[in-house]
View 1 (cartoon, rainbow, N blue to C red):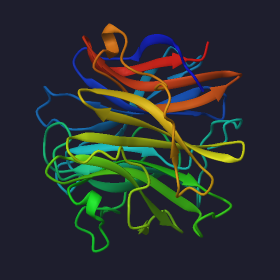
View 2 (view 1 turned 90 degrees about the horizontal axis):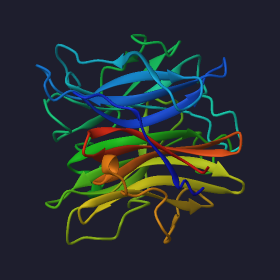
View 3 (view 1 turned 180 degrees about the vertical axis):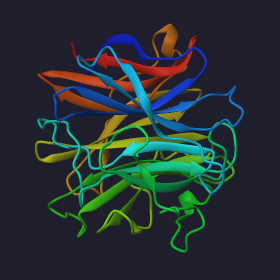
Length: 311
């Protein structure tokens, strides 16, 4: 899974910050990327969700906006989406599955302007076509920091999620969500779990986070999980932010609950002018024998989506 060959930005805008890539293969064999866009100069600044398409995984063209700002509501100014039910098989087709005839997307929602202002909640939306402008949001959030079953590590803000379809129902549920959340004076973020039978009603699973950096005396993040199936193991790609830098790493599990973290070198880390601050927020898959690792790079040119590959 090593991806030492860096190709620089594949999606970048001079004015806006581009973040949080999800990539999937369309039925016609081309690829699509769903990502978050933040324009700090907009009259009503906040996350929106956009999509781009590619034929070769290197050159991307922007095709439209999936989730936009609204005039009012709990999620009127923040809508950073993550596609659900993406193919988890390392050797699979990298497509996206529908459930009850719908494609699903969780998203970070909020009503305050700016870059990730607390509190953020998690919403869910669906589409029958995946086309720009086609997503319908459910009216209420599905997870918040004020829910009755909220855990100690998620009492401030709910962040990025990854929802998989576990057809074997390892945990007794078909749909399993991994997400990072923040709590405490230091703003530490950890990764927890929730489960569902219908993609609409969710409940937390377990009392504690499943992945954290185990650092409690200063700010740090374990975040933006992406879970795949590699042979007989589950693999979670995620990023670590600590001590002024951010990088991508992974952990492995046999049961989706107990995770063994990789202790070796990061999969990607800051090394170039364009990612010298942060090389983080992974989306990783293997296509035709080549591993593609998309990530959010932050450096001299601001924030955009970069690519590293295995060769």
